[in-house]
Image 1 (cartoon, helix red, strand yellow):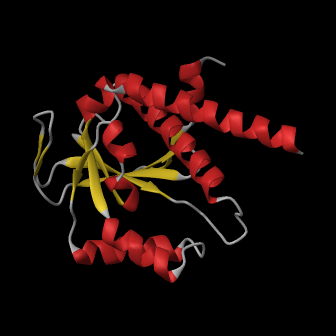
Image 2: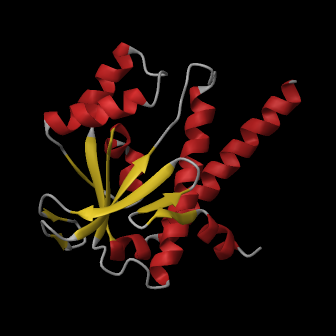
Amino acid sequence: MQKSEHRELRAHFRDEKTLLIGNHGTIQFEMNDKTRRLSDGTVVNKGVLIGTIHILRRLNKHNSNKFEFSLALMIDFLDGMLGLIDLLKKGRFADAVAFDGVSHLAKTSFARELGFDIFDISIANKLVTQFLARKHSDFLSEESWMVQQRKMGQAMISRQKLLDDESIFEMKLIKLQNLQQRRSDRSARLN
């Protein structure tokens, strides 16, 4: 199987408005609710079509290693986003001006390194997003939930920048896959 065929399988439709990316993510196509000016000069006007990224962590208390799970989650996300890039290069979702997501991950250096612009969000939006995240994860303690609530942000990237930054996504994916392999090899040697 060629690389692009594999990636395309990682991004497929669940229904007409929802694209599944990887094992943990979805992109829902909806109208933008606030005008944003991005660093690449793209203006994402209110009312235009955007893809909203959702990462469903599906964590539970039985996941003993948060780092390993987070690493696998980021690898899955990058692989799914590369599948999305392949679909965009084929002309799919031509009306989608940008892609965004609201999460505590949005304000990390990881999101910035991938080319996303970061915006603060309203307290109400933070509460709704965190409620939904907590509902899907009994892994978050009350303390970590409150810390994440303060760190919430919106990450947004234009369609064109996503296409232009494909190599950054690929390099980041390879780097994380190599890290995962090294940790697996080390763990196997210790056992």
